[in-house]
Image (tube, rainbow, N blue to C red; front, top):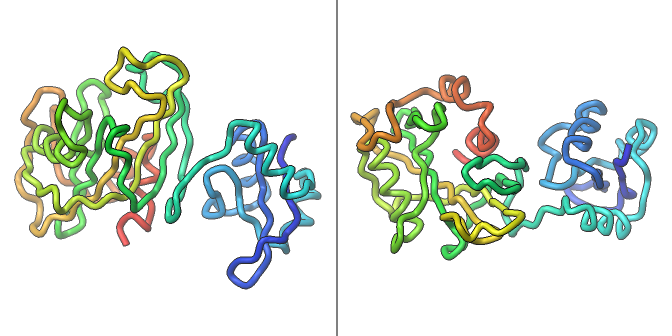
Length: 258
């Protein structure tokens, strides 16, 4: 067991808090949190925030006490440190999701109100809802899976232009780039030389947008053969079809639709 906890010295919301980390894996950290009843909402991308009244019980359950400065050093040295900007909330980390890269990589899923760096953004996805709250889903032929319209940028396109084009190609729906609202991103960090791929940087982004229509369930149909179905679905159906996808924590976040 290599789960660590620092003393409850961090004030917030009228109480003191500790940080709980693993210096081995997120899986170990999540397993410990689930076993000890720490709610998932306490996860902050690379650690859990836990209130002072839980400190003694967590130490008794196996978390090893350590000073805050040493905890931060262990987290940094482990490679599990999760960098983020103000207002962002890390939701998940996965490894080797994109098989076409052919290289080891990790994918961080982040809730964010900020635009991604234009020069490093290789693709975009758009979560489209209609006036009744139904979601636009398309079915990818290659992945044999349902999801939001998404795809890589074409040469000379801005990120927003690519997002608008993908929605049109995969559903036949025309949207206005001005209505795209950034809600998060997938940050893809590649281990190795990816220069032969369309995603040539060590760190690449998939920008994720929300778009709200002002009408109900307009007609949709794929325009290209890489998508073979497009339809409107209530959230319960979206959950049934997509809840095992790596990006699902972003779509189900309440903050996304507030």
